[in-house]
Length: 281
Image (cartoon, rainbow, N blue to C red; front, top):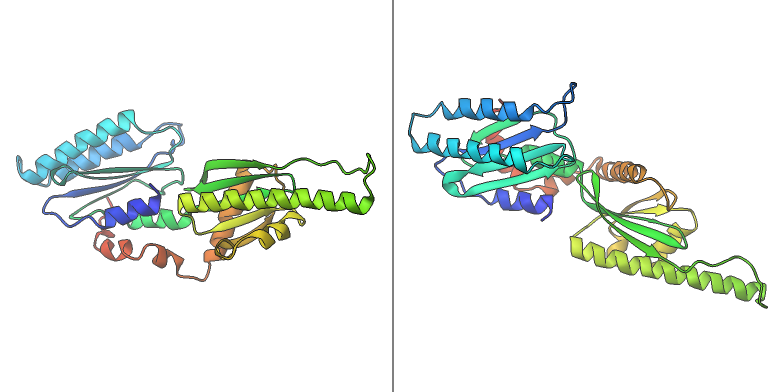
């Protein structure tokens, strides 16, 4: 499930007469190389639970939420996660967790009658999902970038050709031979891209490569895919993954500048959760 799909589902959670926990944690190590989020959770959730009368339904459900959240953090947090969002209400059967590669600025706790989604919507807008096609005339890789990292990689290999005319090739005929191989390779790349975009539900594409391959890709893209292209980048096909991610995210941010894309991509969440913005712990 994509981050936006999780946001949609959480936004549809109806208000309940029990406390709903919305917990955001920066899980990056501190300056001493240690995690500080577990201490924050135990301290803040316990303090919030104690604001309700002893043995009240609200306090009991918060205490159960604290136990489950603590178990989750002890056993299920991936070392690669830089942020975690947890939404819990034991009385309503809610326990949803999202581990993020993109960092959260700080620990943050909200108690309300619905999930507080504004910080998560901001992460979704800052680290959008997209496809990055990095190609030359012989090889290509199609990367799905989400939450600031590569979540899938699909290589597409063409048939390598040697630029010589041995074996009786006339130069013009040999050149057509080379161009046909290149065109066949680009069509394979486009076919693979189309499948990935459809499977992953993507709506934005970045094209990267040299000055030869980028026009070839553009020419072969069907109109629906061509309309998703937000930028063309000059990158080699063997560029480092970190360079590809940075260039792709920069392209996404530039494409979003001066637009209201954040509001369009998260139309419901921001309206529903404004009430909780002043509850920062």
